[in-house]
Image (cartoon, rainbow, N blue to C red):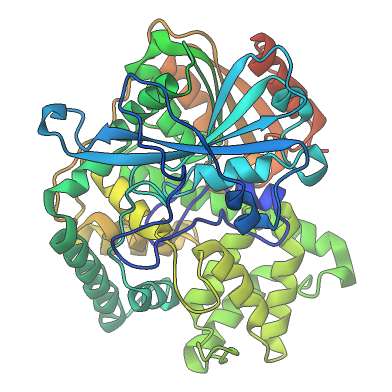
Length: 520
């Protein structure tokens, strides 16, 4: 899950694309149009089936070529902008891709996929997952039985995208001091958040509320009909667990199987959620520290990883290095590179090398990690990942914290969670000035739903393991599956997790109660 500014996201792409530490999202080249999928086929309306057209250009643009033996088709569905007022006639187009293996036999149905965010592209994720287990994608046992259906939720990527934050403001946001102690620094952060909220409000007005999770969950049922499935089979990562849980509460009788990996606890308010994430990142950094010290000379900051971070940020405050593109490697960019690297254990060594590079006068490793997380392109432009992230998170939140309350929590959490607490508190300013009404999601049982598998990772920084049982319990039919590993989300990381999830998706065989899968 991503929270504004300090983004907390599903990093499925980091599992399947070695060059990435965040899920890439296609963005519009201007504020009003996004790349389309589906060719000339008109969008389906809710209750009707999609008209698919071949779109091999999507995997070609993303990876260079499509996966062997896979066919890629695209379509879109026209959904009401506001499901509470569908008679208005105003619609958004939700784009999706269908990926089908030529080995497919005895097809079970479609597997709808959401990578999280909010703001992550399900179309891109489905493409990455189509390349097979050898490349970290889905096993053939799944692609032999299911069409993979990736979709960009409303407001994201190709689906009527929200775009209201300038590239300059995004650079400023990421580059700012993550723990602004002086009043002058703090007021700079406040002013930037006010400006972003004002710009988005001026462009979209009250329609910002339409980008809520509940609205997107209702879109999912229209997608279920459009792909021709009687019941939903769904794989949701990170924020995608919240989207899936919301769907389960709204449409419990329409569920075949749901896998929710990297659980969000819907019952937590903004403060509780942010503090839980501060705990999770502190724990993950402690795990990184232990790993680094055990590596000895292989980890160039093994003497004291935490001090390496704090020293680098302090030095950047006094005299930041300048990168090849002219940017200054401020404490904010350094901090973002740390956040980015804690999502996958494979990024721990690149983090150590990047911090060591700073000591030698080279900031490029830091920028590479931070830019991958922020989805910042080499030309300095951004996708709409964060625009959508703000819009969804703020629409979902029923509370508005005062600036004074954020300032108080910043001080308290700096003591409790020394590296991450203050910045997690500052991140809550993002919705403090949001100009639109709110549309919070439901937080109750999925009465009448079949068993739902909720997967948790003990070392997860972004959606801490404690959330897993909470989500399963809230839904009432949730069954916990545990991975004793590091990083954000678990499937399909190891054979134990993979086998348990595959058996559930294919045969509806629920994992045994209390099943815990080892790290390796």
